[in-house]
Image (cartoon, rainbow, N blue to C red):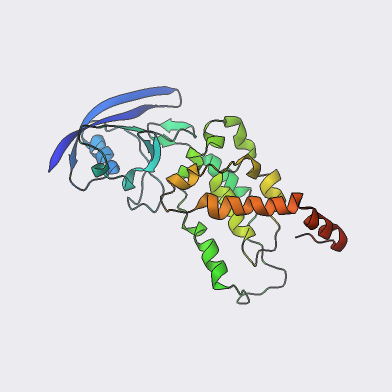
Length: 250
């Protein structure tokens, strides 16, 4: 069974643009990305959209559908009423290149600022030992497909361009938490998380968790525990005294 759906798609580039209306055929079982492809094939051959796997694993087709950050390939048309107008716009937190394609290089810059995994000195290959509970704890964070929906919906980035220089965003604060929680990572990342990557900007509204297509509990399992570690490090008087008496660095 097919029907004609009403779509409003943002068209333009860095200089500006607007929403344009289209009527596009929809068939049973299709997702929004299918409709965007049909729109390209039948009415708007020059429509720019980024995509790759169409399986919800590459994170390329991130956009906003009716104002909510989502993956085009994982948003089924059956979730909308047939007479509903579906609005598709580019990610708002990042500069537009053209149409639905945005410049997400901000995220690559933040990724490069985080020091990589640092094993203890003298630990040879094959000598890594971890408990299963530690493996499972960080494995959740490794499900991230870097779609940057969490980065886009975080109001610290989305609504305050001036914060980008000093705020890594939930995706990369989660990366810092993953490394900090790794029992074999020798680096102490707590001060850097607060002072260099802006952990204090996060006010745990859980908006990043709500849009994660992989269902990662970014706020509860990464950001809040990282805030607790930073608080212990910086503000717990007993920890402070222990550091002074025993010259501990961790």
